[in-house]
Length: 291
Image (tube, rainbow, N blue to C red):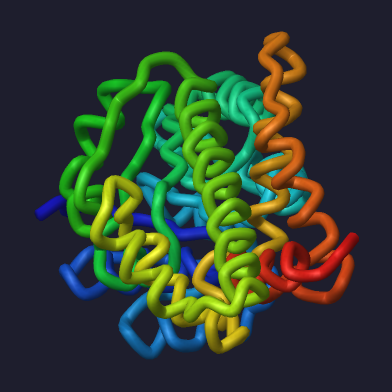
């Protein structure tokens, strides 16, 4: 077990269970969140609470950050009482947020300019895998730091990949989530068409599960779609953000993404209809009605 001290910034659907898993394995953890009330359950579990991101970094040798989007990730690093104010040689920063590669590079350069080490490590997985310690880490940046934090990654996840220079982790995560978002859009269209064709959605799920298209996502989300109840495991607003960032990456690289662009429009409609905080399977609410 590492004797180092760890910080955790950002305590939402993903960050809180990740930090709890570190605490459960006996690691020393200091936490901070913009909404300080979200620290309460972790403090009860044994964490220390910092009053700012800077104080959290100051108290920790390695700080993890799970933040909502590029704007939040940048604000926590560059803003008042932010990460950079406390970053010095000997400290390390591991950003597990989903951001674009430009944001990852900007943050990484700022951390290393202050003498710190930086690793981007966005995760594939949602609320359930975060709680179960079954996330997949997509890492890039300082390979020595990656090797050092293997015990912590193993507590929070089932597999980690080192992909090379900073930016590769962000790009891999966007490709993964773009594929997942597009698949969910097609799945919800299939569920809607089955229902309107007079077919049982439950039977469609069974047929899909028996063939080459069988996958855990359809099996997991199918019942939610049938009930039209979408408790958030991966909020739709974050799924749409990832689709948007992936489409921007495609545009930057000259790669057409017509299927994903169409799926993104459905997520935009669902978010506009008030489903942004629901699970991303709530895109069903957009595809089962005319735009």
